[in-house]
Amino acid sequence: MAEQDKKGKEHIVQEFGELQPVRIGLSEDVRAKSVRALNRMLAHTMAMRDAYKKAHWQTAGATFYELHLLFDKHYEEQAELMDSIAERIQTLGGVTVALPGDVASESEIARGPRGRETARAQLDRLANGHEKILLDARPLAREADDAGDDGTNDLIVSEIVRTNELQSWFIVQHLSRHSELGDTPAK
Ligand SMILES: [Fe+2]
Image 1 (tube, rainbow, N blue to C red):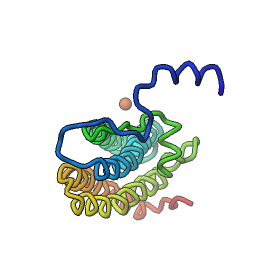
Image 2 (tube, protein in one colour; image 1 turned 90 degrees about the vertical axis):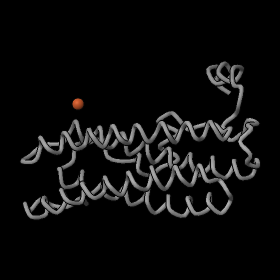
Image 3 (cartoon, rainbow, N blue to C red; image 1 turned 180 degrees about the horizontal axis):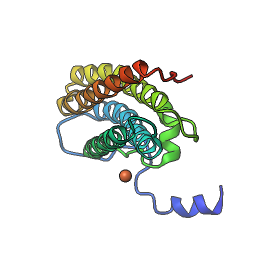
Image 4 (tube, protein in one colour; image 1 turned 45 degrees about the horizontal axis):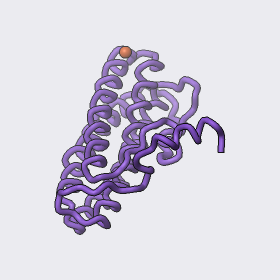
């Protein structure tokens, strides 16, 4: 083990994947399952937040101003969502994923190109990210509901699903406009 890692280890009070005892009337099994689900949602959300900031900085072309503003608005909303998910994980007694390397291994949304893409490709990539989150989120919400974890179910449905559906609507509207403008789609 590298000297650096050993040093960090001495100060760890809870390993990633371990649960702290909490008093919210949910069994350890249920909490462990919800923490795993929420950490996946958290990684996706952090990846979307960063994808929006990248798009905000790097966008260009005829729709520059509106996309520049829209991407930053969605960035802020994803950042808010990230905080709600992370605090739910800690409430359940879990440990959140937090650093970019961990997010990249947990969410494929985090793995995009370093280069600057066309506005059309940015929109495509963001629409795909929202859809990926929604496809993952709905079954996880149903599992939390079946397990009796109403708080996690509510967070996934009323915050994660609703925010991503709404943002997807805005992105897809811009996407159809870019198709009309004749921009080439993402490869
Ligand atoms: Fe900015």
